[in-house]
Length: 151
Image (cartoon, rainbow, N blue to C red; front, side, top):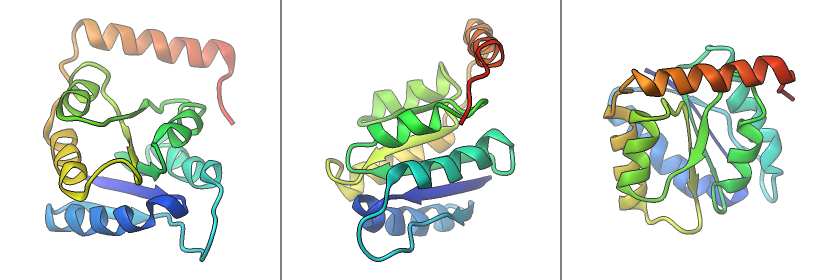
């Protein structure tokens, strides 16, 4: 799988560790930074990752900021992106199983490294169930198209 990974300044440390994990798991990683020293605006990085996911240049994306919420808000502005912050095993699994989540948003401040690793592994291995959930995702896509949602 090809996975774009990005973070603001508060997620740099976790991003580096997750890139190592993803590589160890055999995933192809596209590291979109931040590579800047000092403060970085999360909307800039979130837009880079989300556009790659929305255009299907990559299969999935992972975004990391202080809470994961800011990155999520930005990523969901891009058509075709389904992003959510996950903070435990259940949200990581159900986000894939029910929502076909293609952008995982994580907290660089609130998650420990072991928990973040576990969430990523669950998110990677959990399949989308389809069925009634696919119908709901089609409704989301129709809403995006009708409203012209996007950056």
